[in-house]
Image: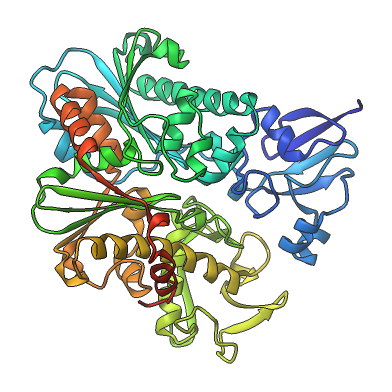
Length: 535
């Protein structure tokens, strides 16, 4: 079969691929990281590249649907659809790359780790890993006192096989080789993270004695090479709920060959060890007054804790909060519009790093919809008012311009479309449905909630007022909300350094009542009601 050479810019890397191979597949085969929210099925724009030189196959129907005529004329293609028909020069824009930059703010770690509850600590060092669907966060911990020596977050490179949990599972189900590829991708990423963490403080990785890992049920199963098909079939049961002890070598970690690895237990098919870690870090089992604990992500876990009783639910909020399925969506990296204000008929915004605007991240979308409600641009059903001065038509649908082409790094207007609002509407509805189902099952109303704890990286950056205004979070006084950052990482650190914390987490996980939304006869009613924006 004929081979072609692809030169990738701006890195300058070269790769060979066979005729008929998509540009995205070529990237995968050569370990060139590029985003692929939908898992390479042509249903999103996250893998967009520009073919600067060479011949490719003609644009597919998916590309004609998702790329404008102007973009296609300038060489923009979806890398999962475009196939080489000759040697190519391909430009990968920043928003299509998977980054590995630090992504931390102040969170629970400084307060919790010194009081991790373990009196049987040992000398040496350990690694705590929060294996998220989107990001992997790592912490190098001094086991003698529980202090954090270094910390780092990187994009989960499994994202090239699909950005959300379901896409990831479906890829793993294709064949044993696909499942093995996902497992190996995760272990290599953890090894890379460990080497970075240990290198920052001159700790020899070979001497690291313990590793603790938390992740949602799918990430847990894929890392261990366990079956995942049952997670997408009713009654959505995990292969195992138990905690797992395994050697690093058996798991496939090469950077810490002599370490023992501990994985936190799961609660249900879509509430895993990462949420157990959140509950441990927030001391949920000791909470008396009604408290919502919400870990927002591509899969959002919510717990209602009150009087020592905990009920948990999972919500398929999807990748919209990470910029997925949004026309100009991107992750919260340099150039992402993260704050938006609409006032006196004008749109104002700020970007991450004060860079020239490239796209819009999740917090910017939340702000935008909240501001559009205030400006009477959208109605409760989510439809834009076509008569509003800020609304115009582009490619057959209503849009509002956030950054004009003269202020855009793309050289074109950055807009929010009617379709984008629908995507955020679905994500918002998923989370609010989970909240309302928990309250209803406990016989509580919104005013009965005394505290709302928001966990997760995305949750740490959102404007609570915007989330309340669109109806994603309950309408409560702002003083009742608390943003705690990566509580899953904090919980993983706790169980790493403390045998007592580990036992408490396992005991708590067994006592949690798991509520399966799909089994509720009122699910559709709750979801349809939650679709209303502003409620």
